[in-house]
Amino acid sequence: MSELTAQAFDVAMHERGPVQINIPRDFFYGENKHTIRAPKKLTHSAGSEAALSDAVKLIKNAKNPVILAGGGVSMGNAYDEVAALAEYLGVPVACTYLHNDSFPANHRLSVGNLGYQGHKSAMNAMHDADVVIALGSRLSVFGTLPQYNFDYFPKNAKIIQVDIDHRRLGLSKAVDCLVHGDCKQAAASMLTRLQAEDNIACLSNKAEREANVAELKATWEAELDSFTDLGAQSPETGRMKPRAMLRQMEMALPEHAMVATDIGNICSVSNSYLRFNDKETSMLGAMTYGNCGYAFPAAIGAKVARPERPSFAYIGDGAWGMSLNEVLTCVREEIPTTAVVFNNGQWGAEKKNQVLWFGDRYIGSQLKGDHSYAEIARSMGAEGITVTHEDQVQDAIRQATENQMVHGKTTVVEMMVTKELGDPFRRDAMKLPQRVLKRYQNTSEVSESATGQPTDFVGKNSAH
Image (tube, one colour):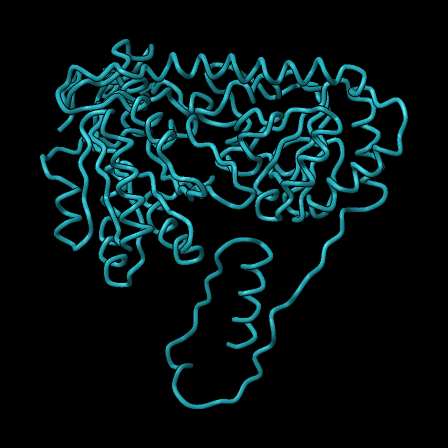
């Protein structure tokens, strides 16, 4: 038991994930003496000499390289090393999906994040690259799939992948140069080696490429503003447009905030608006497991680990049904945390699929009821705030922050939003259903639904 428990902690620390140990109940009876060994401390290198040399050769000859900063950058505290490499080469830095904190958003070379509802500035920078320097990234399929009908990941670019876990190297994409090492040390080593080289191709047009980064960012910001439609409160009384609400939240989030996001539709759309400038881990996502109900427990854990930082969870009302009971945990254990619940009366991620691919046949995605999550929170001993207009959003977030950081209280901020849903996320996987059995062929679909967005609980052929 002691040996396996120690091993489990080592695996959890070095592979950055949970480990489960199953122990038969009868093993807990009786007394025994065991030696519990100390944690296994490992040191890592920048990578092999051959791999680093190959990487430098590819970068040296690249005319338009780009850096892809993954979760390993934030986990390994490699911000400064990545920034130094980017600044020397004058290359844009994109963040991988759900790792919006892997490079400071306010850095002049930051182009934002990839993946669902990410930044087109990052996607355009990636699309035009001839060499991709992936630092601490698994190159996950979720962070490289087409978005906004744009297949942005370059087809002919050379790829350098640096990762501390050899099992992740070349796992999802064909890679030209594999570097098994620590991305912090690898970035520093690459910079030192490049500084000793002559005739680095991308330095000849460095100023021009940096100007292009600024242009990409400005163009995307204008387009995002056009999506957001600030000031256009929905005619539906007491309901906000999700993007307008998210933009107001972006402006109100306090400095050094930690944000955990769940897997709902609006949570995914928030990927466009979550930007972090701290050089430390600030964003927590369910990642490729897609765990529903993940955000609030993650935000609670983050608060326990870093009580001096404000902690927020972004959650749809569907996922909130799986974790609202943890409000009692926060109250009983005095863990002040803020849950922002997007109340649109539906399982939005699933419903968007039903709108487009299943002819608006809503099955299991309606969340009827006129209950108030803010009132439920107050009944549990926490604070509750209901927001019905975008003009109230910033005040609500500031009040929740004060409740958390000054008064030590948990707050549930209930955002009343319309049923408007973000662009579908799985065009790569979802297909129009074609039924084989004759009795079901009347439910086959030949085209995506033309309704676009659900506006109420009733749809064509609606199932109850």
